[in-house]
Length: 257
Image 1 (tube, one colour):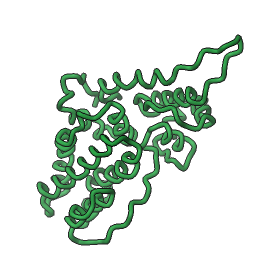
Image 2 (cartoon, helix red, strand yellow):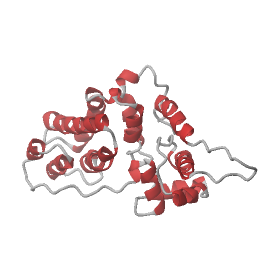
Image 3 (tube, rainbow, N blue to C red):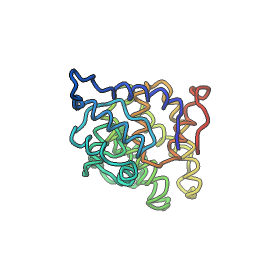
Image 4 (cartoon, one colour):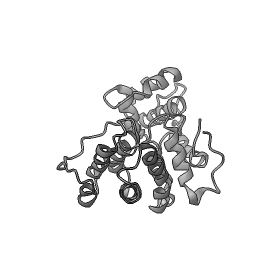
């Protein structure tokens, strides 16, 4: 299944250009340079495991890259779903720019409070994400519901994994959208709302916040970093990103759902 078709068509040439091997200088085939090997491994991971274009990066462990290139697609796909950076595939994927495979560093502790707005008033970093845990104390929707497993989980991952790896524009956008999503939930979704309402209204707020905070103004490389932070197979989030691109709507073709 492929999402964001225009984004893919824009970004894939960047990855393909990075993958070109230097021409050999004699009759013996030259061994690929480490950067070229890593770029090929990124493309192989993307094609086999993620169904995404490779990020435009060539920095990785050449030995791990060679291992990935020697592994067939079925094995890669099976491993990547559960891969984290404590395993070889996870380390390589994280280094290549597949940020969903990176471990999420611990966030600095924030004093516990029963007043959820305290987190909104005091923090703009990953500690703001505690707001969703606080709301869950009242909502009791469960660990697999929107507050914890969706907006809370991605809030921390984008803050702790993606922000340190992107440029100033994307970093600023991630901070704005983090604030927008939490402020929307606080202003628009009552504390006594049922779980279905929280899920529906919270999910709907993403497209609104992405556009209002300037997603459409980001560079293609920033879009790539954001998309590659999303878990493999998380179709709802990918479709949400596509529908959020109001200013790009005329460029986008049909999205497979």
